[in-house]
Length: 212
Image 1 (tube, rainbow, N blue to C red):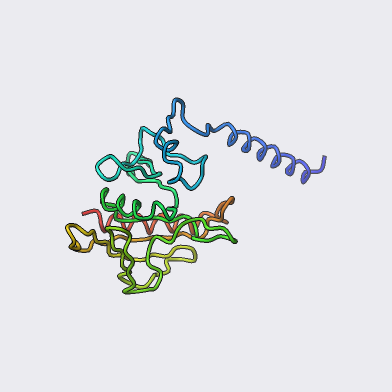
Image 2: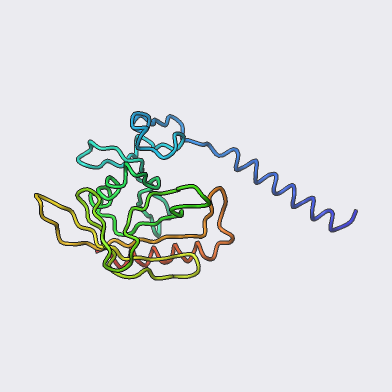
């Protein structure tokens, strides 16, 4: 047999095996409950992407729903505790900023674009007008502290100032860093690992610098 044909056949077999392994991954964990997601359908972007009940993020003293879960991952050397959330819809944008405030989030990572093709993938939940631009989201004010900074070809970092209104007065502002990765297309994957790993490095450095 032709050695090139043998290599091609081996590659096809490996790809088929990888696909079978991927298809065998459970779509949800055993015994999973999605009670809050099913009872708050107007606050979900997609009907089939709901948060697990046991790790659901609570806001507003446990009484308000947001499509988000607490997630831990990593190694013994560095275990990361994070929140994974849907891209906000207009009805949940204010709630997202309440979540950021309630849980003292310092770094937001956005893995989508606001619009891709002709479809809205995420509501614009931060000011888009450059340094000094500010938008009120209910009881939360978000202001661009600086101009966006490009950190590689696919990663943009923007420092925001977040304030909360209490009894008619705004609190002192706190820094929140917004990291947007533009290299992950809808229904696709990044072209390679380098830019994604660069984004992770940027996020880790921001977390380390703002962990106090």
